[in-house]
Length: 121
Image 1 (cartoon, helix red, strand yellow):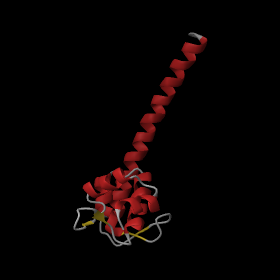
Image 2 (cartoon, rainbow, N blue to C red):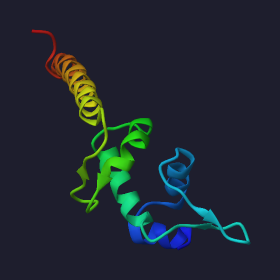
Image 3 (tube, rainbow, N blue to C red):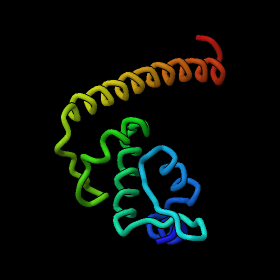
Image 4 (cartoon, rainbow, N blue to C red):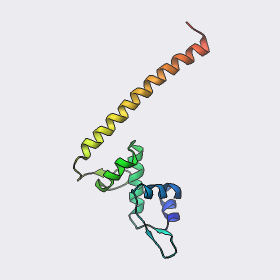
């Protein structure tokens, strides 16, 4: 399938599909006229990529995990890769630290807003 059909089937823009390819997450062949051509599994791969991105994983991490992802893109199963659990736990810890940092920022903003709206107390 060509990039336009892949974009239509997945709801992902052509630009994003090209980005996935640049990051080594998705492969295509080139037709004689230079168009990208994707195999029948490409929509599943794009779905897996989207799910892993939604989990907050950077594309470099996804590149290492993608071969471990199987099944339905909405409920992917990760299996068969050494070090996968350690890597996911490290990513989870990074996300948790970022949430904590953002929570602190939110509290400071709440204090500033309260003072701006109601004056110092």
